[in-house]
Length: 275
Image 1: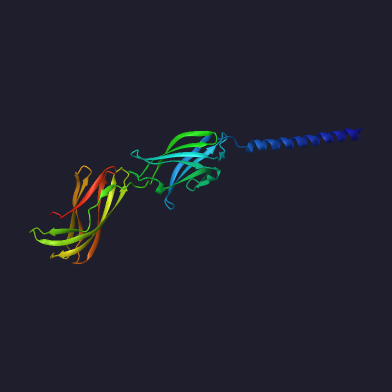
Image 2: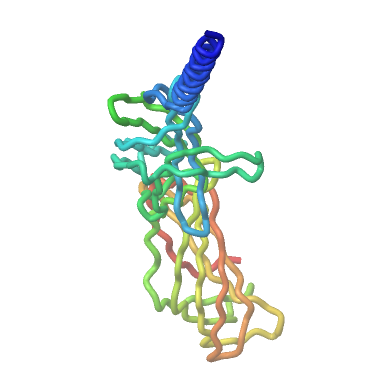
């Protein structure tokens, strides 16, 4: 009788232990399960100069702050600080676009989607920075448009009509005698947007000396110029000095014009400089 009771008690103990193990396993599964997408987080845009591309980051999370992946569409619009649209595109993303992105400065990583935009895809900007507007549709959820700062935007090329070349330029001394004569053989122009919304134009001119009657070896040869806007108004009238060289020699130098309106157009003209 005692053996029967003892065996019955052992059987109850074994069943009890098995039941405990089963419940424990069930609780672990509930803790590790991830829910549905509820939130969007970690939205940011970074520029990577080595690849000449921007990466737009965002994360998707459930109610327990677990990071999730999904497929969907990101609608991206970029405007510069003058509110001029320079990029608009709907970009598809999938689970493979999600990965762990680290931030060395803050010593953490996040499981984020990274959408790549080539710099060459963006139209020229009238300012160095602007705003990127992001709307995300993923699975059965959508997230309203959010705005973030984007920097290092490509510059808009200001429309500047250059003088025809070759063109002869003459310098006279104060007595009206011809001191220099040279031929401007070529001129090039590059422009860059500034943070204040204005643009800067850099001109490089190449000249060949054809006459040098100067009595001074350290003298300069000057090329005069006028810059007119689309209304024909002269916005800049100046001269730029180039080191004088011997007859038949060529010299190259540059000059810069600041505070140009990137939404306007200009015409550059060469002149014989006045002293």
